[in-house]
Length: 156
Image (tube, rainbow, N blue to C red):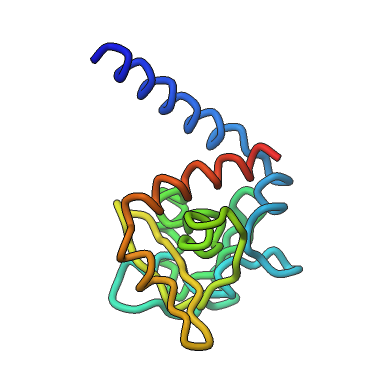
């Protein structure tokens, strides 16, 4: 029992080290952004936590750790500014299923998503292949593997 607790504490420390240790260059190198460093193809990250995701507006923007986010309203911009980690997508905005299944960075359909444990997860959905459906069949295992794979990518 004690060994399990020690391993768990080490795991938590590793997560914290990776999250805190990211600099702008690492973040922009690994995140799913365009050449302008725009995340989520311009969608408002806060809107995913409401009814439906909507496109952000150019007058409401924030650069967070080298990544540009747009917001539909000033209120959403302020919510993000107060707690950016709550609203930034997991796995750099890459497909959560692919990250868990193969550890690869695969582009997403920006409107195929799921909020899990208060975090935004995005999925590939094209050509009759909706990976959100596959994710739902084995979410627990895929999430654990995706977390491990993403930490590995960030240390490269």
